[in-house]
Length: 345
Image (cartoon, rainbow, N blue to C red):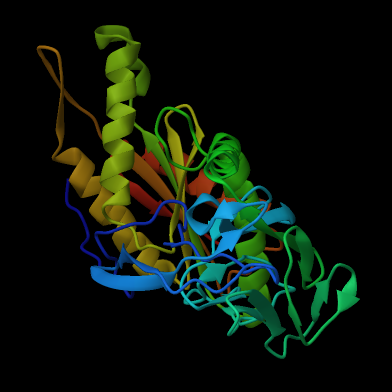
């Protein structure tokens, strides 16, 4: 079969961050009653050794036992927990913010969390469009206390907490269980739909391209029938890890159901999305998965749809449906094929 070659209009890195994870190290709010401590302990961060003051809270105990965190308690990313890192952390919808929240009512750089001279944490609004509310009151800047509630924009509420190790592990496991596929470790359908809704709103508001790939493993039932479901599970893991290696950090890979996957590509037009799809197809075609004594080879079919003029979809569901129709045509064309959505899909 003759294949067209595509050049991508975006650069994709091999490294991929699945959960948009924020690297963090602990800092603790110093209480008024705690005496200053001259002792400093080294901590490794980003390949460097950084010293930090040790303070003692009469209730919380040593600083290492309780760390400052932000927990999303309302909004698109409910349950997400981020440990505050360094001396300051920007929050907004921009990709280079230390904490990125996909909410169209949040400004690109909405608020700044920082450590003051006493070691406590403060929040400052960065001139956001829809404002920052602390415990229901609009503020420009304020100090923070444990369990303060902060509303950013119209629908996202985060809580500032000082958490011990047990609390932190609990929130992390709770968030993972609600947003990730338990077998593959990638995002699940619920998270995909939530994320696509937020990204679609941003793309429509700012006139930016947004592409989705709908991926299906060809003849996957035959793998399960001939080699067993464990072999099929192994194929799913290989496909997902192969896709991860070709995506950027901002891209989203999710299991849509069974042997179907969806990729969300922000700021990516049709040419770049199609080129990525073709490169994924070729990679999978060349892979032979070993399970016990069997060598298993599979192929994938991919449908591509893009929100960008002149093809403007009216909802994230219609964009996803267009990619699904393109996938169906790829199957009809003999499988192991990439098909782009057409006007009217």
